[in-house]
Length: 213
Ligand SMILES: [Zn+2]
Image 1 (cartoon, rainbow, N blue to C red):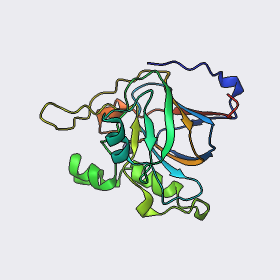
Image 2: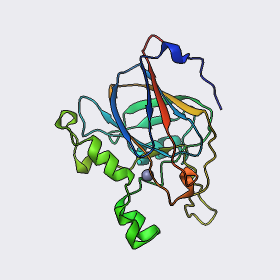
Image 3: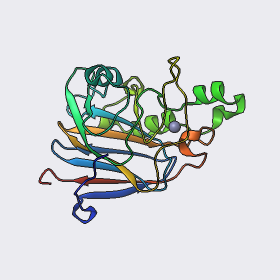
């Protein structure tokens, strides 16, 4: 667990994103990007794209293979599908983040919970809504396997995934430095049926500091 020395009063961007909402924003090379889990136990589904060539995106596979670890925390470099470093986690007071569980979707809600859950709002809907603006040059096929910040998905000795109660608590945060200009795409998960949000989705705070910090 590494704490940050940055002061929120110096941030160039400071926004709150409600549960069920999304956020899309360019983070420039050298800038520092923090996500705060304001009330604890909140899954923050996140993807990154190379801002100048959006077919290059975060790759869970490359990141896991390169660091030889399935969990993300301080020191983890987030790699792209082309093997390039995109961002590096420089501070983390939660300690573990998932990149295996994927984003909730109408289809998975139906399979996991019940047929009528198909119509509940899901992270995949938020991703698609946020990238619908043509300025981002992103489409459906660009929604790759994502990161779930603050989500606890331990792997059992038998090799299975379990979605557990979060290990995050109010005020826990993760902070990363961009190694290239990236588009950050976030869905603050609306999922009510899964313990990853403590059955009570809650807001997050997002901060960015300039490269001088
Ligand atoms: Zn979700």
